[in-house]
Amino acid sequence: MSGFLASRRAAVAAPRAPEAAPRMPDSLALLAALPVPVVVLDRENRFRFANPAAEQFFQLSASTLAQLGLVDLIPADTRLFSLVDQVRAQDAPVSDHDLTLESPRLHRSGVAAHGAPLPEMPGAVVLTLQDGSKAQKLDRQLNFRGAARGASAMAAMLAHEVKNPLSGIRGAAQLLEQSASEADRELCTLIQDEADRIRNLVERMEMFSERPVERAPVNIHEVLDHVRRIASRGFASHLRIVEDYDPSLPPVHGNRDLLVQILLNLVKNAAEAVDPITGEIHLSTAYHHGVRIAIPGSRERVHLPLQVSVRDNGPGIPEEVASTLWEPFVTTKRGGQGLGLALVAKLVADQGALIECDTRPGRTVFRLSLPMTPPDLTAPRKTRAE
Image 1 (cartoon, rainbow, N blue to C red):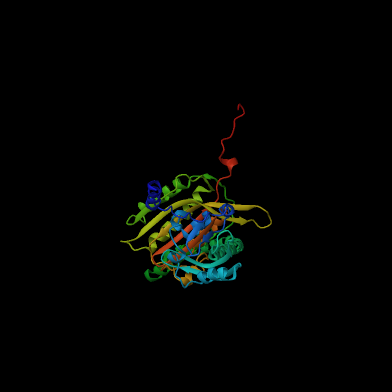
Image 2: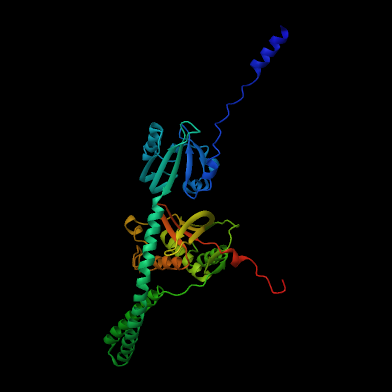
């Protein structure tokens, strides 16, 4: 009897083992390889799974997401919650488009969502998210590339047809100045100054002409360090520049001089946008799954996993300007000509890369997505003796 009581007391005293969490289905391992964001929500809409693309979408690691619920990232009245509820109620897939996911932690617009039940986990929902805003930006950029090719021929013709007469006008003004009265000399000087201004503008337009771009392996961190030194000793000497680099990045396949020009333009724009006292510019690099672009007329797809970001804490870009940001002659600067970002877009396209901009008050980010150098160009070449 005493043995029975002792065993009974031991059973009562022994702590109850915690209930094991439902085992994740093996099929979810396949979702980790998908390039689109995929998450699994349990009955309470807490994150149970997130693939690498979802980590990039939410800008949070899978381990951090595992401690959060969907309501921690977006307001409970967002349409995405209705979609998840419909999936559970109908026990069938449900899709929705053009969603806005807006909160202090997240800013996404034009999102397409597809939810489906997960039979192995009762009440769970598999959610696929696609950022339509990125596709829209990419579409605008590709349209600009097509327009730029047509404008390039016009720019070359304009340069030839305008610069020659300008030289004659300026020469004539110089000759008149020698025998003109004091008042007329001022007019001659004005003519020369305006001729010089037009010539400089035409020369900037010449940069849009189509020229072959030679590409080679480039250490993007050396480029960024060069740009930072120029900025720190010149136009951004009064600002704080923060660097956050991934040192493991492989070489970029690009043109070093053009990359310097692109990033110098972006950093200069950021420096001009921020407050002179509280302004900050953040330069960062990272490896992402990136996007793949189909080349027209070919089955080849270009992979752009290397990302360079230039972020500032300025007031943001006005909405009416953001939609036409990459077009020539669009600017918010007083006296600006609006060719800087148009030139950046062209130089980026010439290197087979992409650039996008996310902006809101207090935060503007330009993200440059670049291709890796092909393995056959990075591998050391064997000598004949080898």
